[in-house]
Length: 341
Image 1 (tube, rainbow, N blue to C red):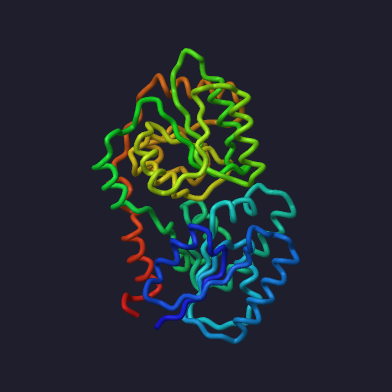
Image 2: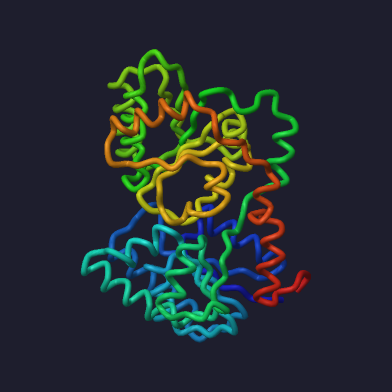
């Protein structure tokens, strides 16, 4: 049986989805994330534990997640493996390359050093693929692939949906960290003329203080059109996406977010920030790009979008290349991991 070593935030949905690609293998999970703790001493002691438990062990495949932390630390482990893969996440990589400060650039050099350890570099979007190529890596080593979305389940939900794409219903499905500009989004929608009806659902979560901040902001605005929903399970999320006309995702930087792809698969039209990961034919045809410089201008742009219906609803066929079932087969073929091993 194929032995797989997984090193990363193992409770994160991204990691769990990738782990499903190793069905039929013996998978060993190691993480430094413990009950939300992030102190350096906790991380250091956790790493020493992983080091001692894996020293000189042999694995067929090592799959590491998050290059700017786990990806670097993996280089200091003394285990052996036949094939190693690093999965780069969007926010994990972008902040260290390009027009960034000295310290981030220095950390980028350490990331560059760590990447040389791996047989394959898995990236989520074309812009990160191009950056990896630019800094000198062979494109044969780069796997351009998110694990994908449950397209067959979404198609089934669409066929059974009693309501589809309710007019002027918007939904934001991102977490509440500063990166995703949720406060800017809420303030921008509050600037839309009171004569224009819409509904904005804020779906997501964050730290307790981030959640409190978002709830307080919505309460203070006293705008019935803006609704705090919070965290929902996957089934409810798909239903809410199906019922919305627009999804909105305006991070300052991102990889190719899967929740954005899920929203498109649910036939939502899109409103996205003008960042490299959204620059492709799919987004150009189905989304409005929006500037984040001024809240009043943002509100005016939302008014224009509400009053102008010039974007088509995407179809699930447009998303076939992101289907998790097809990607699972493709990935296992690349790393030469057959089924039943």
